[in-house]
Image (tube, rainbow, N blue to C red; front, side):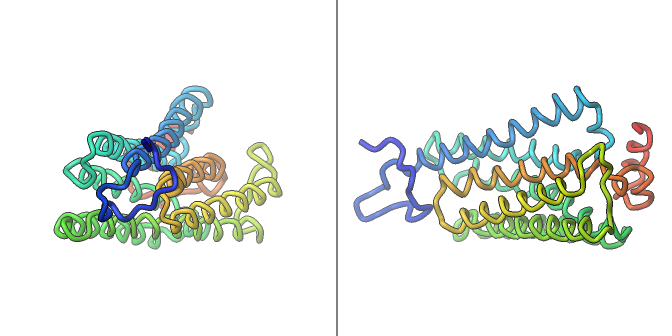
Length: 266
């Protein structure tokens, strides 16, 4: 008897012979790994960035990242539960989609700062945030209204678009650093090391996106979790650079309360 069919495809859910043996268990394992990525991300941010180094409150990108990782962890829990009780597309799946949409919205906010903050384009950042919020609301509404027909397909498209956005954000920021639009203090990392790190992170994101297209749950869900870790690694360094400090942000923070928080912790 097959307990976990590790290389099962996402579909079909059923065959003429009945349920695919080990399919539910494979999805369960994939989401457990996804959960662990974000559990470790959250633990790192709390224990090290906040408690140990006390720089979390000065890093708005990590604050966005923390919300994204924590909410995505909640989404993963709903998925673990639904596969554990073998109720793949019930109410727990709907809850997981809503949590996931919220998580990726904050995930996408970080990319806006990578692309537009070096140019001090506050309007583009705010419009970009409005775009992702509207996209999230539209995706959630469309998913729920067409749940019986489409289930998670609209959300999966949003995940793919978000990963592409992150690749674009890291790529644009790599070019900014390379051509001198932004600089990094040697106390954070050398310019060469930072450029190499960005290349590695971009390659990892591309590999994770490719893995998702293969349609194997054991690759796609852990891979998506890895993109959150890529985000946390990148924002740990980028969020400490001059253009992301309270002085560098100036009026470019989303709302005034965030600017006051940054100033009060410097």
